[in-house]
Length: 211
Image (tube, rainbow, N blue to C red):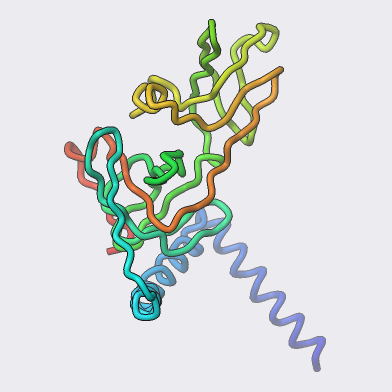
């Protein structure tokens, strides 16, 4: 009897997995979206409880690049990213206290999703004391055009990327490239983050994933 039940469950799971694969993961995306919407009220209740039991209320004043920025609450975290409340703009996500890069906005909405930079892929600038070179970050490695050229220094988001040059001027690096190896500077996920909005936010309609 138990064997029949296990076999039936295995067949059902394989069927669901097959449907998800052949539907280009549309089934899993639908389930994730439903769970996100269902879980939103629980995040609100949790925040109310935390504020109720907090002895001293905290107020966060954020000044980033000489501009005032609104701090957004981080709700939770998974392996590849973090969920942020009331995230309505695409762009870069920064820790307002340490001024470190956290990641890139992947989905906007009442509960937005931010993909951590160290699980992303993007062009970078490597700046040493006398040299500056371009490269590409992928899976904790830096790929450079000519691996035989001796290049080393701090690694920044590429100047060609949004806010790349500004972050380099403010010394917001993601690690160091030395002797052909990349030493990443992985930030601790903070309680609050700020958004550097994409240049294109004003010219195109954003997809509100949490609405």
